[in-house]
Image 1: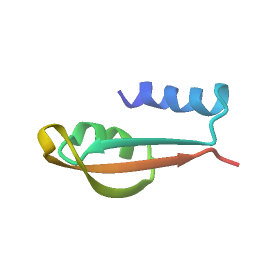
Image 2 (image 1 turned 180 degrees about the vertical axis):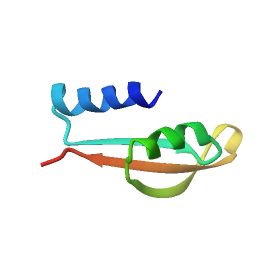
Image 3 (image 1 turned 135 degrees about the vertical axis):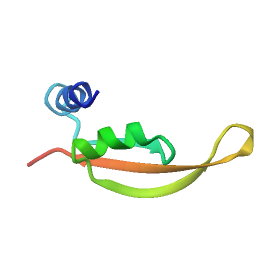
Image 4 (image 1 turned 120 degrees about the vertical axis):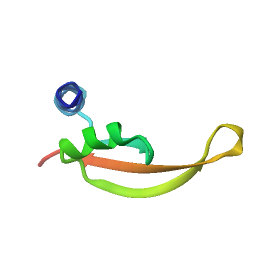
Length: 68
C-alpha cells in the first residue's frame, strides 16, 4: 500500500503540479496512519469531527509540501 501511495504523491507533485497534499485518517485506523508514517508524511494535528449519527470521530491530519 505504501508503494501505491508513494506513486500517487509523486503524480500529484510532478504531473499535477500541486504545491501541497493533505491526508487524514481516523485515529482508530492504524493501517492508514502507518502508511503515512512509513512515507514520512509530517503529522499536522489531531482533531475531532462529527461523524455519522452525530458521533465524534478523532482524526489525524497530515500535510506534505512540494520540495523546493
